[in-house]
Image 1 (spheres, each protein chain N blue to C red):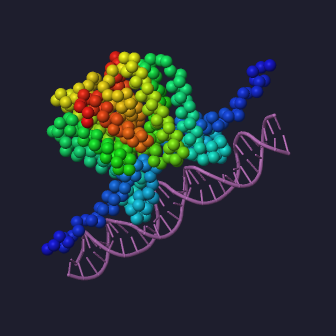
Image 2 (tube, rainbow over the protein chains, first blue to last red):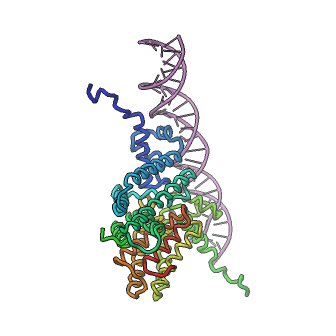
Image 3 (spheres, chains in turn orange, yellow, cyan, green):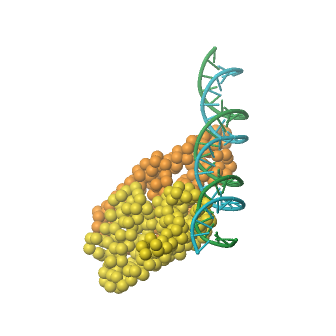
Length: 199
Length: 199
DNA sequence: GCGAATTTACTTATTGATAGGTAAGTTGTC
DNA sequence: GACAACTTACCTATCAATAAGTAAATTCGC
């Protein structure tokens, strides 16, 4: 009984659907929702437009699925680093941004969704609202934690400081497409503002 | 000799062209470049698509003209407040953001252009690059001025702090579409970080 | 356990709407 | 009558979406 004798798990079962979703996510973060088409996906994956419609009847369904999966992934990311120091959590956050930029100069989902908000289907707007609220709450909790533990030092309240950090990283990730140096300047300065040694 | 006897300056001469440019700018900042069409403009202004093509042959020409005019306007804005205190200049900058938000939740030009950068015609990319560089330089000069005059107090260098401020306002303006409170939190906290009394 | 019925996972072909763009004609003004 | 400022009429490409068909896998009745 070799491994290859076992049924090749469901390599097909959900494989196409997942590949479509992966490609949609990639295109969303590089081109934005209104600037990618079913053609972009189907030609890249070697299938027909109708195959995408089979799994995701409307483009809206595809968009919603991308955000929902992202929200679940983000939730796992947050849960997975519970108990860590505030500083470690902050660094994980920063590293996330760097990885976006390095992957075809992608921008963060909140950046795409808020920039295109008024030209998004209403189902996607609802998902975007929930997602952005979750992100900001999480950023606030990190800063509160860091204040309480004495790791961070800054004037003003945590929620306002979270707004600065969140908005700056979102904007910075977009601006990095035009000025590569800005992201590093940004992170260094944010650390300085939190009273951390140069990071 | 009444006023109406005088040649109505050139009420027509460049009026249509200007109205097209105004509408294009408005649509760019509310919908983004790829989500507005010649139809949006022509139907709103009561003319035909071909009338727009007469003044701006390609959509690229229209986009470039919008950014170029904006750069000139921004330059006048900068020149106009030379000699003022750093604090006054900063407040003028903040007020600019507020005005965007209040006008149909527009976002700043740099936000649109950087979010859509990879799906913009190359002529527009070139304009966007120049514009963003000008904005960041200006933000840096305000902060340097404020540091030198003793109005501002913060750790790190002015250029990095300018990156934080610029990126945070760009991101915040976008996020305000989903969370109206974020812009005020942001401005308040930025003032605190610059060592200013609550503003 | 075998064949019929049904479902899954697509392809082919076509739709109507809309995109940006162009050429030729019309109208008003100096 | 010449030029500027359009409109009319059209073209081609692309968009998301749908209908109809098909081969393979799965489920079900007996």
